[in-house]
Every structure is written in C-alpha cells, then in structure tokens.
Length: 315
DNA sequence: GCCCAGGTGAAGC
DNA sequence: GCTTCACATGGG
Image (spheres, rainbow, N blue to C red):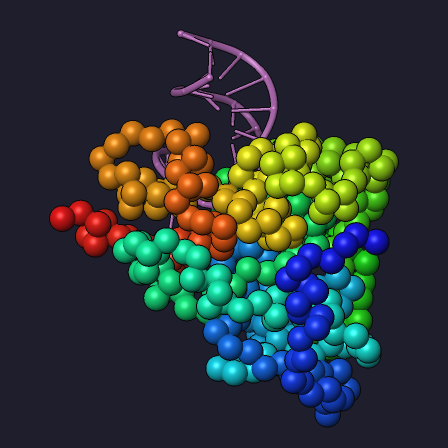
C-alpha cells in the first residue's frame, strides 16, 4: 500500500461533521459541511467529464458509485444508489479536507490572479482516479469540453460495467477498465466518435492491461520523473501528462498549458511579445508558486467563462 | 464552407 | 534544435 500523502493524512484526522441517512427514495445520503466550495464551477471546469446537471443536482459516477451531489453555501450533500459504510472515497475525490484559503495565499499577488480568484471564488481541484483521468485526457486533444463529455459518455455506455443507479435516471456505467478497452479493436472505439485518438487510447490500454506500465508506481516518484513516464505512453505529451499529474496524482506544481492558458499567459504576462512554449513553462514554474497547478485552473476557468481581458490589460 | 477545440507525433527546415 | 502539418469530429 502506498504511503498516504500529507494532505490525505490531515484529511483522515480531521473530524468532518456530517449526517448519514436513508432518503425517502431509498438512496443512501450524507451531508458534509464545506466552506469556499463552488461545486458547479469545480465540476464544469474541464477536469472531470462525467457530471451532468439534472433538476437540482449534479449526477455523476465515481468509481463504481452512481452519485448525486447537491450544494448550498455551507453544505454538499451526496446520495448514492447503494449502501455506503465508508465515504472516504468521496471526501478524497472532492478534496473536502483542503483549506482553499491556504492554497490561494500561495498565488502571486498580481492583477491577473486577483481577477481570476475574485471571479472564480470557490473553484477547486478534484482528486480523480489516474486511469480514468489519463484515458479522458487522451481523448481530449483538440476537442471542446462538450464533445469530450459526449465521447466519454459513449465509451462508458458501450464498454463500462453497469452499476446501480436511481431508477428515475438513465442507467449508469463505471468507466471501462484498461483490460476491457484492450479487448477492443480500433474500429469499435471509433464508434464512440473519438477519431484519430482511438489508436492512442487502445495502445495505452494494452500497455496497462499487460502490466507493462504501472500507474500506481507514479505516486512514489518526483513530479518530473512521473511526467517523463506518462509521456512515454502513446498520445500523451506534456499537456496531457500535466493534467493527469495535477487532477489525479495531486502534484500541485504540474501546470498544464493548453490553448486557453497559453492565450492567458501571453496576453496577461507577455503582451506584444513572441514567447514559445518552453518559455511559458519556465515562466509558469517560476511565477505561480508551489500551487501553480491550482493557479492554472483559476486562469483556465476565468478565461473560458469570462473571456477577454484585453481591455483590462491593454492600456 | 470556414475556423476552432484542455494536442500529439512525425516530417520538414 | 524549432516550426509546420495531418489527424476525426462536431459546434458556432
């Protein structure tokens, strides 16, 4: 068993005030007290792709659990379709033990970050399963977030194991395992609309399925080494590796630079200058501190939801 | 029709 | 070394 990371240890020691109950519908529920947690922003900020808004809550799947999440200012309540004796997996996924204020304190005190933090108050990073995160981001390249969601939904429906869900909703499926996907042929995967990404996903699934690549081992490595390892996988370059390092392994220093973040960095920090990707990565590593990846998510979400800063920046 | 999307890998300078 | 291009697919 891998050693617990410090944050997780702190989390397990922490006393979480919560309530457990069976709801009238027969679902199994729990409520957590939270502070500075914008669930909607977090679930729609392009880190996880299986959450859908339905009526008054977010429906999704974590591992083998169908989950409905509802949020108020001070609470997040969760409902599952099967009995849950230990909710640690959800606390971990939502990172409920993390003090956001402590993270934001580490951000650089400059105008772009202040604007992003103000606009996206309560935005969080999730802690996802490495395989699901890796596969999802292999499928993400040059796709809009809506389309990534569609591809992954198809993939889960076609190849994922059925799991118990609220009968009022459409059937739920776990994310398909590497072994299951490794049994596919490329044309089967292409029926999920993933196009040229199909061979990348298939080959990666085969490597994992054959035991030739061990995702669990990366937890023990320094971030640079873990990145090098991930980039050996087909279809995984610097950006996708950084997403997995940040969203699944919790390496807070990983700083994914996609088209949005690239635009943000160039507009905000290098106006009217030509800077290549290597320069941007170097700047990011130096400028954004030990929680750079968290800062990156604020910039990304700010750019996507609010759009232009050109007017703010150009004077 | 055109351009773009949480990119990567290979070919071309 | 760094830059350019093909690669599926769908939305605006």
